[in-house]
Image (tube, rainbow, N blue to C red; front, side, top):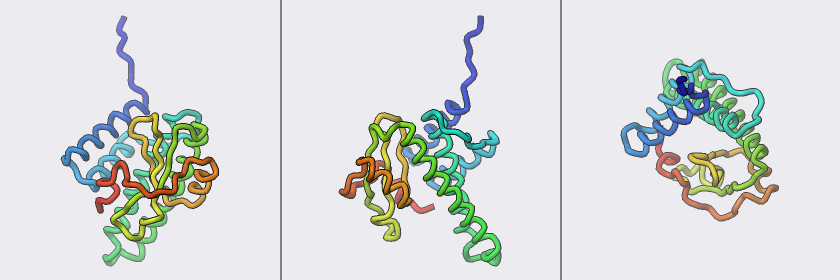
Length: 183
């Protein structure tokens, strides 16, 4: 009997994501290319976020989906910002990106609740961007592979502080090169 098993959606996604992370870490692709390939992947598999987060895997999938969409649409907004299409498309892309960022932050909270805020640490990170300094923070799921989240959400930050997993000292991001690279 053939024991070949079909990979599930999460396994396929995580393999693809790890492959992109490796290519980025090796300098084979830029952050912009990383974001484009991530977006292309979600489009190619006709991805849709899960409605209910009842597993870490579903939460991580949703987080990456929303984060990828948010960054992609923000990237498009920057591209059209100083063009004739500025007023029509800039606000559309920017608002869409912001909506996805909000969904990403909600999903991060869902994941943390699912994990009961265990093995989590959070802190503000040092940023090259003055606009992100003392605003952007990193959430690390210490017992998960490649599980590093970033947010500016004050609501999420309040929950992290309430749960006692936010550390007041500013640190270098675990993925500082990626965070500080413009795209």
